[in-house]
Structures are given as structure tokens and as C-alpha cells.
Length: 114
Image 1 (tube, rainbow, N blue to C red):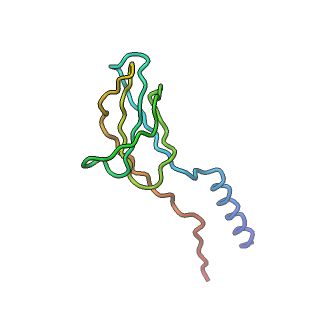
Image 2: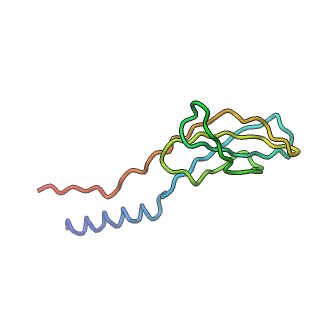
Image 3: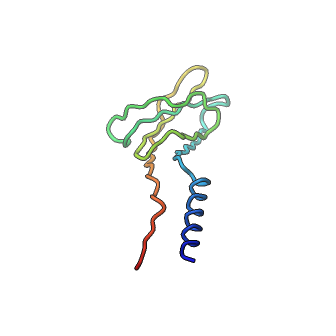
């Protein structure tokens, strides 16, 4: 009986891992009521906190919708800004937004009591 329960528990853990999230993503959303239709956006990211003067790298350009999923993040802090582009002219950066990406919890913990 105990062995069957262990096997069932292991099967459930493997099923959860197979169907569960195995990578992180940071989803950015924003509003823009001032720029004209046809404006696109550039997404820029710095590794680390949004303090001091972060060094931003452009990770996406010509985004036509007001949302972006960054699927390349690992555990740790990331700082984001956006710029708007219309008629080839890029705006100043937006406010900063911080994403603290957590680590995944460990799984498969077990205990034997005798």
C-alpha cells in the first residue's frame, strides 16, 4: 500500500512538472492615450534594480500592441522602460518598471518516518 502511494505521488509530481510552468516570463502592459494611431513601441531591459543609472538593451522593436511578454528572464531583478516611435522619431523613455523574478520552488520532497 505504501509503495503504491509512493508511485502515485511520483506520478503526480512528474505530471505536474510536465504540464507546469518550467520557464519564467515577465508580462509588460502599458497605456498610451497621447500618441497617434500607428505608434509602435520599443521594449528595453536592464539586468538588476531600477536604481542608479541602469544600462538598457533593446529587446523588442516595433511592437504594435500595448503588451509584451519577455520569455527570456531567469531568476533575479530586471528593470524595463519603453519608448514610443512614430514617423521614425523615438520618444524619451517611459517610467521604469521592476520585475523581481523568483526562483521555482523545489519539488519531490519526501520524508520517511520510522
